[in-house]
Length: 329
Image (tube, rainbow, N blue to C red):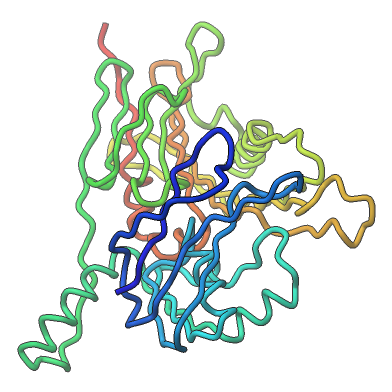
């Protein structure tokens, strides 16, 4: 059984450390030891994680894209273990970390296997595999379960839409209403609308054709995401624009834009070769525009590009469900 060496932090590093043993986890028999090392009068992080192993093992890590698993997988690879990462997307696993040497990253990538499975299929895949192996039904194909939706209706402000039932509402986000995916924090939707006292819209066509509306939407996004950090560069483009007449007889514009953010790993470095530009994030922004009550309403959806490819059908169902309604005073 592997052991965890825990150290109680104090204001000053003690001259001697007392170690408390506790059960940690058994990585297929591999013994891991975590320890905290202190050095005085030398600038370095307060703690350094040391990992040692008694033998080379094949280790499966569920996840591996964030927090401790990112560094744990690299440490285990460095000391000779064979690592397999099982996660919903492959890109964050193989992507080079800020400040990581090219040689170190290349060595890690060559020694690591990664399997990407869509997020909503992971649990179904694991549970069904266990059940079918137990009962001997190994040749059955599984269909991905459909996503259930809830409807949100705002009779006071005059709009409605459907959203995935597992999404949670976030208050104080600045929009009139805001929902987000509890598992993918960069995936969310919101609704905003103009004030009739500052502008008066008769139809969404007041924005011009869909192409002109797309340029305005992209400009608005770029203004909101403007960064004052050094070395940040944004690439953006309008993916598509369209118009449609919904079942309520009103015209709606749909706009899709893509924005990529690049940043230097060390913006204060003197030498250009030390300022390596890497992709920070790559997102799809989708807007549905409609006019009613002399107001311009906008349903906004934000999602990472790799998640959009996985969930495009559900996202478009949300977009098509957006309606603006007459408010009776």
